[in-house]
Length: 291
Ligand code: NAP
Image (cartoon, rainbow, N blue to C red; front, top):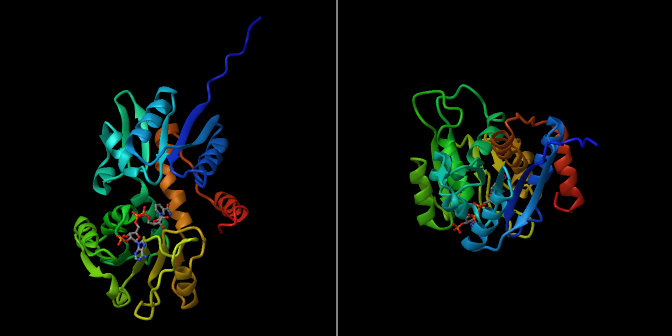
């Protein structure tokens, strides 16, 4: 009796602590279904220390996983774990994805590219350069500030990046990475004058976190306002910006676009970002009471 030999399913995962909230499985499973790929994508919790991360990553690699997405608090651990790393991961000092290979793992950070694609469509074209204000100087801000320097790069001048953060030292470190300048947190409202784009890369305004207290009166009405947060989908910052006529972009766009390079690297397929996927993610957030 001949038995049909089926191709084994492809495997991928997201590692974090906590990880139950991650939307990565829904994004990747949707793309896999569309591409006819038999994908099993799982959430794997790993305790916050490096050894726990290493043990989990070793196990998944040995089990034949193509790669893993990495979320808090393991993004720095992922870079440390990898045998090789992309310039984006090295610049950010952290990785949000690993691709397993013969050498071990290759680390990449797609947060900067995810941010750039998310905001590019909303920005006016044809400028020599843009003035970009980044609030925050954590892991996301590092990747964003660096990507912001070359956002829609057209002229001879790179963009002007201004980093505003509660902890001044961290603002200076991130500003240096983007060849920009640091501004004190207490001067954040004045820093908005003349901006083309404002990014909230702090955790302020997220469900369960304190609100972001930011007076928008100095901000030009043409400036794009982007919030990295997607729970809620429309933060108080985005609501206030929309009310005064500024174009806004939600963190859900960055979440979707940062997932594209992983899917491409692991499955050699081009995933499509469309409204069907957006609606699915929004419905999932609503079901969980997070939208
Ligand atoms: P992080 O490394 O912990 O950085 C947190 C940032 O928030 C720091 O700059 C911190 O300032 C600031 N902050 C926290 N509490 C504050 C307060 N009470 N007052 C003023 N500033 C405060 O976190 P992260 O990984 O960069 O994440 C930052 C945000 O990006 C989060 O909201 C996260 O959800 C979002 N994110 C979104 C995506 C996406 O795909 N949409 C991807 C990655 C991250 P100090 O330096 O002074 O502590």
